Amino acid sequence: MPAKIVATHDRAEQRAARLRSPEAAVDGVHAAAGVDAPAEKRHRQGDAKLRTAALAFAVGSVIHNGDHFRRGLDSVSRELQAVGWLGMAVSLGAIVVVLAGHRTAPLVAVSAGFPLALGFIGAHWLPTWSALSDPFVEGGASWFSIVASLLEIAGALWLGVAGLVALRRRGGLASATG
Image 1 (cartoon, helix red, strand yellow):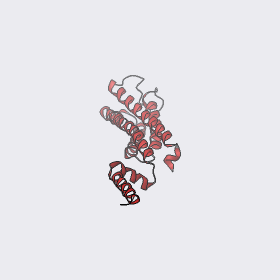
Image 2 (tube, helix red, strand yellow):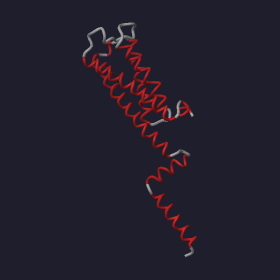
Image 3 (spheres, helix red, strand yellow):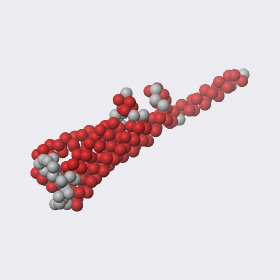
Image 4 (tube, one colour):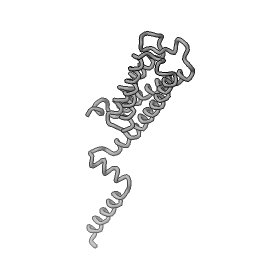
């Protein structure tokens, strides 16, 4: 066989071997989508941290909301109860978006995490200031209620921070809106 044909045959064999590898299948999908595979892999690794924060927030939310059911829904004002249901909906939406890996997940995490944390702090860790108060600082809260509240606040803050980190790694707001 002439040298040129042998070299072409060897390159074809090498290419076929690369295409059979599992990495090639993933990289081929990325290439077809016009995505740089190594960057996508970095996003997935970073998104794992965001998903972990979302799961931690979900656990804190379940414990805190479970505590409200344990204490009885009539333990808070109707106004706080309404805002609480809205907060649960926002929490659930943010958790679902993050766990689904949507491209807007970091922005949603920031947009939900920090405001929810502030709301939980305002409701439970400030003295009575309105119908939206269920203050623990004035006494009477069980240790379980205190821990449950702190877990949800910590989870919401973690979600917000993880969202900021993911947004920065991806290149800012344009990555979520483009």
